[in-house]
Length: 85
Image (cartoon, rainbow, N blue to C red):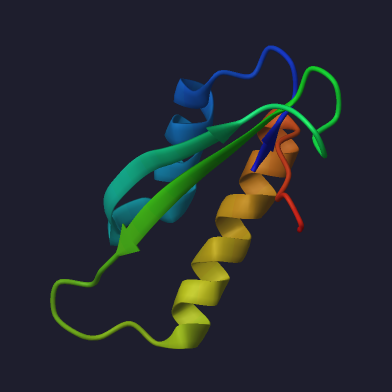
C-alpha cells in the first residue's frame, strides 16, 4: 500500500480491521519501503492478512469482495492506495 505523508501505520491497520470485520483472524505488518519508484514523502507498506470463517471454507469471491472493501475504505478514509508493480 502507498501511504501519503502523515498517515500512520496504526491508522491503516485500524481501517483494515474495521473493513475486514469478523473474518479477519490475523494482521501482520511485514514490509516498509521508501526510495526509488515511490513518490517523494510516500511510503510503501505491506500487511499480511489472514481471513477465516469459524465454520466453513471461504470462497474466492468472498475473499476478493472483502479485499475490495478494505481497499475502498483505505482510499476513502486515508487516501491510501494499492501499490502496483
